[in-house]
Length: 143
Image (cartoon, helix red, strand yellow):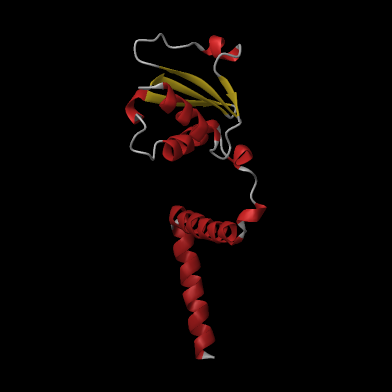
């Protein structure tokens, strides 16, 4: 009987404290609801996940391409820019030789979620291509 009375008093005290501190109570609810949501999402298998092209928005896909393509030390990270529009990756910048240009396009095409690759890179002492030039078939690469 004493334990029930003690538990009831503790519960009443907790309710009184939480009603006084509604902001604190909201933080607790948000914190523990987030943990429950995280546990539930981590319990689902990767097989049930949507394909990367449906999950990733354009900025996230651009960061993914950068992290996967620029892992190699030979890739000129500072001179290549990666932009994504509707799943199409646009590579811009200067590369030292044609072989590295082709390898860069091939590696980008292999990233999960990339729908197509537009190669706007150029060699030294060469004018950079424009987006319109590549759209007409000069440098367009489908994934």
